View: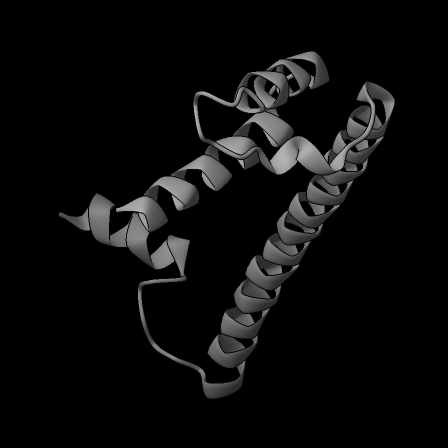
Length: 111
């Protein structure tokens, strides 16, 4: 059970580090340093508020870069799949109503 408490504490520390202000992280670290609570903070490695703030800024910048890379990669992947489907459709002359909107329109109008 103690292991799960530590895991939960690390997850909460990461949440505070990513989504909260530096001042809240500093207050959380000071609160956890209390001897009577028995918890250890993941923020204990920072000697000052400025160190914590700089680290938090770098983490947020890194995560924003990863997120933007993922979005760009996803858009490129989707466009390449669409291009590949259209290329295969032209190459094999697939007689299907899936991609030909004129045939679909004619089918709707004829019924």
